[in-house]
Length: 77
View 1 (tube, helix red, strand yellow):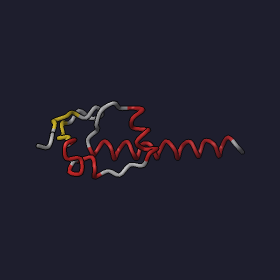
View 2: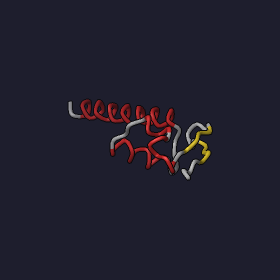
View 3: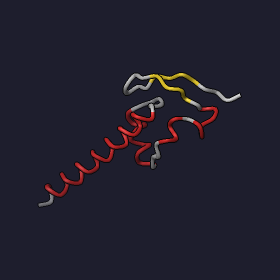
View 4: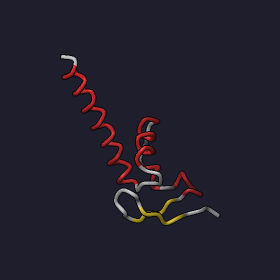
């Protein structure tokens, strides 16, 4: 029988259903992450995030990378 678990997102504290036993049906599969994005999330959170927060943290990661690139450009002038 598939294992489903009620969890609370460590970022927003909203509840969501984690479907670790049916991972292809889990809400987290709606957000596609590359390895760098996954590593960024792992550095900040030790448990699953809800899909909305996963998308927000993914965007946060890209915003941070963009600002790093801008800072490097200004530094090299």
